[in-house]
Length: 193
Length: 193
Image (cartoon, rainbow over all chains, first blue to last red):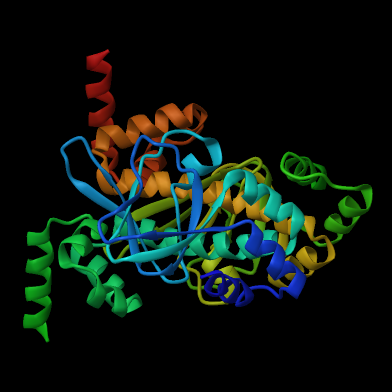
């Protein structure tokens, strides 16, 4: 599993053999079965988790009991409640496995130690967070300014594999729709073609 | 102006005198008058800009001509169309000054050179982007799952100075409301108190 992580890091920065050995010492591996939780709302998020295999989702539940998916995390992605992880406040997100998954996890103490011991990891995380910001920025503008149909088309076009792999009710939750709205949108789009 | 930037960097990482001198060589300063543009949609965003003084907003305009504000940037914040800056694609955001402003700007070439010449800047930007992600994550979940009244209250409570300093029609645009909706929310809240 550590090799999946090291390969992903090396897509962004160069690592010496010594760096790779050092990095490996800071991570622990964890397996999750489908539907198992990595994090529950109200608990403190103790780890940043790298998805080496599988698929997870991060979501919260509003006062009316509606589920809102924040992100999907598949191979090569990181999942966490970043605010809870960094500040130690209770998590507002739940994270669970949509498929059987394998993770490489790092605690906050080790995250700090890692970036001091292997400074190139600051560069790796700088690039990772920089790219995440671009993604979040696009999604935020889409949530504010696009119609339901535009939101669905954006997702379908930018992540065609997501649409295939993830159950439709979860896609609806990610886009902030009811499953009925998503069905209607897909029917309308099919009619237009 | 460079001193405002260096102070802000030193809130997050330690800089030697040599680091400070090196950093200064990569930035150029720019003044903007109120209503002047830093970036127009469709142009490539050539600089990351640090706000040393003043207040700017980043926004886009949808097909119906409605304005949607993405962020406000005041003293100590960075503004850019990050995707356009990093990838050289046309910007989807406009950035203009709400107040007379003074900026410290860096080009992409110099941003790359800076992080190589002063590696601690990778750490600075890692922490900066990490914090921005936390803010964006909260705002995204708020946009998806909160009522209009909750969105307004979140903003008012987390950024009381924003509410005072920024014109109400811009606050409405930031929250994704019409100015009429914002007025109604504020009246309702005043009645509850």
